[in-house]
Structure formats: structure tokens, C-alpha cells
Amino acid sequence: MTNHRPQTQPPQRARRFPRHARPRVAAAIDFGTHGSGFAWAFTSEEQRPIAERRLTFHMEWIDQPAPYVKTRSALLVDGGGAILDWGFAAARRYKLESRGGAAIALEHGFKMRLPDGDPAAVELVTGYLQELYRYAVERITGEAQVREEEIRWCVTVPAIWRDRERHLMRRAAVAAGMPDDVRRLLIAVEPEVATQYCQGHLQLATADDEPDEAGDWSMLVIDAGGGTVDLSSFRIDDRGSLTELGHASGGPHGGTFVDRAFLVNVLAKRIGGDLLQRLQVDLPAAVLEILDNWERDKRFFDPSRGAPFNLPLPVKLYQLLSQEGRLSRFAASQQGIEEPIVLSNAEVKAAFDEVVEPILALVDEHLVRVAGQLDHVFLVGGFAQSPYLRSRLTQHLAGRAAVQVPPNPASAVLAGAVHFALDPDVVIARKSPRTYGIATNLPFEDAVDPPDRLLPGNGNGQRLCMDRFEAIVQRDDLLPVDTERKITLFPVSDTETELELVMLGAEAAGVPRYADEPQVHVLGTVNVPIGPANGRAAADRGVVLTLAFGGTEIAVTAVDATSGHTLQHRITFASMGRGGA
Image (tube, rainbow, N blue to C red; front, side, top):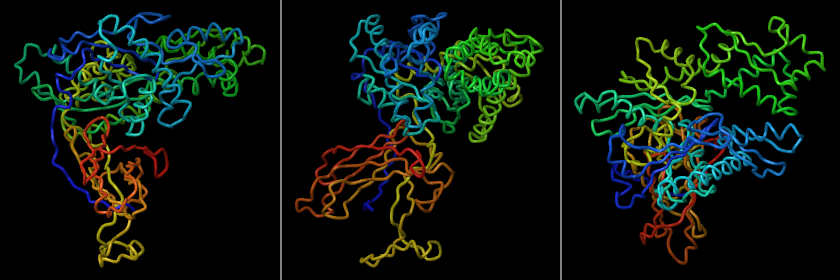
């Protein structure tokens, strides 16, 4: 085990992005499970109040069914995995060309596979970001008359993504051609940046109030997207700075999971689960056609209206049901109607409730964590357009908070990400989502530590307990941005040419005593090459690691303790088990 001496530095607050070093344009990419888009603004807009900033949204996509701020998060690939098209155009070509038996596939939903570390998902995310980035750069540089290197970028991630997933997103974005510079490529948390969009909405709503009254709010934002639902709460002071009230939370309860519930619990009961599985393999275009029609109608679902859903039955599915003698069973499931697919309000409501009920539970958990009255609760994201989700959430919070849906809720994250790219310093403090720590040897306590943890062979007379968990920051600590913690590492032998720090994490409240407890996970390792000893004593080969917390990513720097020179280092994030990040 590498020896170390932990040191705690008082939180420091400094402007990370000096105005003179700022680029001319701030741009954002909202990469979503179902749809993605980009927007931008000149950096001079930072001087304006949020509500008055002029943002440019791209609304014209190839093969779009209607003007919209996002295109599909989809790729059309050939049998070898080469990208043939992307976005709405990919979905349209797939419907047309797959009917001719072409060896092509429509890849979608790959964002939700990225946290698994699946190499195929990483490749798809990188490929999609590359297409979107090139497209965005061409249009922004043309419209704004700036060079590519004069643009600062911001890419959004779900709040539930941890350090590892955020690191994977940064790597994918850089591999896609985005700048490999933490000052020009920001990672933004979706509900957090949506807070800034909602802040602008409140500025408009309270324009006649006194400045102090209009600028001091507490706010919970519920970002209901396609793949995830994320919650984030902040206190906004009279200067517009944000301090997190309770660390962001969420879960995989976005609109696409309503689609899954529809397929598994509704459609499969009509045509048979085995046939649905075959369709997804042999006739995926038919399934895509059904889901597109479902998507078109589900966003307007309101059980109080009482009208059933009628979805066109794809011709190939009708033929297959007839050939296999299943048409009568299908018709019997909907009062003798063979075509279209007729869905009752009860069936649609049940599909929604599989997702809505967990969302309500998440909101309750977050409100307990905040432990205080919130001034405002906002619902944003593409799923926020659902009248059913709005009504259920409003009923659930009746008497506790009024739910507001700002204009264009599907654009809230994208607009907020541009605001964040304009002023990354707007968030001044965040709550730590977990306890971060390291494994170390600490003084042995006879009344507490078991005998088998006593470090054997210690020659200096000090009795040490092996594999203790030493906290660097604790869960729910309020950390000003760039809060620094320093750890000095030393080699234990002359043969060591690299020092390694293993970062541990624990989700539960409190600090674990031992590093090998079940709730402790390896988050990742920091490795610093130090070269051969060349006659230097171990005490002269120390390295000071500085870990900066409070941002959307953990920043690490390594400095030679003797010379003061900055050293190269690499961070490797763990993927599963005790290594589950």
C-alpha cells in the first residue's frame, strides 16, 4: 500500500474563466436518449440578465416531420457498422430501405447503454456526437462568422451519471472532434442547467418586483427526459448565483420507459410475447412504425378525455397475424376490431403509471433530503409535455408546492446549457453526492478494531489498523466549486516507478470504518509515473495530488513535492462490483 499524508486545504473561490480569455461564442449540445440538439449565443450575452439573453436554436433538420429544437438520437449503419445517416434522416431512410432487404440497422437508445461501458455503445455515442458536432460547427461558424477555435462547448449529462459516466462522455466528445480542453469543453448536469432556464422564466414573471425579492429563490427542477428523470434543487441569491440545496438525484424513468411498458404490457398481450420478440429481430421497421405512431399520440394522453388510442396496424404485421392464425386472438383483445390497434384509456394509463409512480417517489425522497419549503417547483424536459405527468405531479404535490411548466419545456436543458457555457461560474457550491475516500493504515484501536486487522511486521513500534477508510469529503457536504483536498504520496520502495491512489466511494450517509465494507466501491485510480529512484530516498520522491471537488467533474493535478514541477497522471474509472462507480 502506498504511504500518504492527507492534507485539507480551506475552500478557495476564484474565477476559473477570466473574461479576457473567453471565446466569442458559447454553444451547447443537449445529447438525449430520444432526441438531441444544439444552440449558441455570443459570449457578450453574459452581460445581460438571463431572461434577456439572445440565444439561437437550430430548428431545421433534414427530414424533420415538423420544426423542432431536436433531431432523433439515431444512426443508420450498414452491416459493417459504418454510419450511413443520422437523426431524422436515419429513421426515414431505414423505413424506406429496410423494406428492400438491405443489410442496415437503425441504432437508437445508445445513450442509456453508455454507463455500462459497452464498447459498442461508446462507439455509437462517439459516432453520433461526431455527426452532430460537425453539423453544428458548420452552421455556427457560418452564422456567427467565427472560427471553430473561438467556440466554447457544453455537453449535457443526466444527474444520475457518476464520475465514471461523465468521464466517458468527455472522452467520447473529444474523440468526436470536440476540444480536448477543460476550459473549452464543459460537462453540464441536465437539471442543474435547466434551473438557469427556469430562473430566466422567473425573472420575466417577477419583473415588477423589487430586485432583492426577484432574485432570492429556492427552486426544485424536475427534468423528465426520454431516458432519465433527474431532480436538482438550488438556492438562487440576489446576484443570480446558485448554491445546491440537496445533491442531484434521479432514475431511469423517462418517456422511453413508457414505450417499453406499452410494448411489453399492451402490445405483447395482443399479438403474443414470442411474436413481438420475432418482430423486433425480423421486422424492426414495423415495430418502429408502431412506436412512432404511439409517440405521436402518447404526448397528448389525458385520461379525462375518455377517447381511445387508435394506432395504425403495419401491413406486414397484419399479414403475419393472418398467416399464423393469430388475427382472431388479436381482434378478440379489442372487441372484435382487426385494424387499427385500439388502446383503452386504462391500458394507456397503466403504461404511464409504471413510470410515473417511481417519479413521484423520487420527488418525495428529494423533498425529504432538502428538508425545507421550496419557493418553486418546475417540470421540464420532453416528457414534461405529457398532460398526464403534469396532472399526476400537480395532484401529488397539492398543498406542498405548486408545479410550474415553463414555455417550451423540452428546450429548458438546451437553453440552460448555453447559459452555463456563457457563465460556468454561476454555480458557486454543490452538495457531494457520495462520500469520497481512500484506503489507508491508521492507529489501531483495541476496543474497536478486530485483531486480524492489526498490521503485521511494523518496525517503528506503532500499531496500525489495515485497510481503514479515510474520508476526503463526505456525502452531502456543501462544497464551493474548486474546493481542494491535497494528498501527499510516497513510494514504499526504491523499485517503484509509479504511484497509485485508489479512490473509494460510499453512497450511504456516514463514513465507513473500513475500505472493504460492502457499501464501499472503488471509483477509480490515479496513477502518477515518478521514474526510477536514481539514488533518491523515498522521502524525496513524494507527489502532491490536489483533488478539486464541487464542479461537475473531479479535477486532479499532480506535483513533484520536491521540485514543484507538474507531473503527468492518468485517471482510470472502475466499472463494476466493488469497483462499481
